[in-house]
View 1 (cartoon, rainbow, N blue to C red):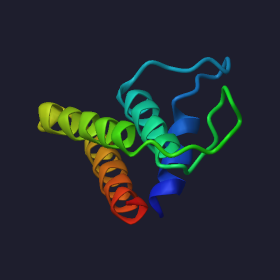
View 2 (cartoon, rainbow, N blue to C red):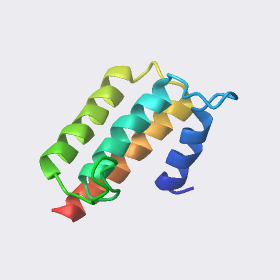
View 3 (cartoon, rainbow, N blue to C red):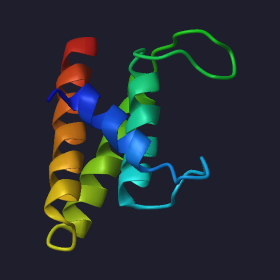
Length: 99
């Protein structure tokens, strides 16, 4: 399963039966990862509708995810650990190619 598929699956899992977004680790990681992806120009800005690149903001969000991963190591479920590792690796590779 590709990282993008994992993000989509976790996004769906983070939604309760009533359609409300559940506050959990995966939702937090997904939120930060989405901000990084948007800053890499992979998704349009929801306010302007334009695809914009901001590599400094992308780097900041990737660094936030890496810090979150490092600070929570040993306290995550195996699925959460795989999820954040996958997001970090995927975004780091995309950052390198975006430069």
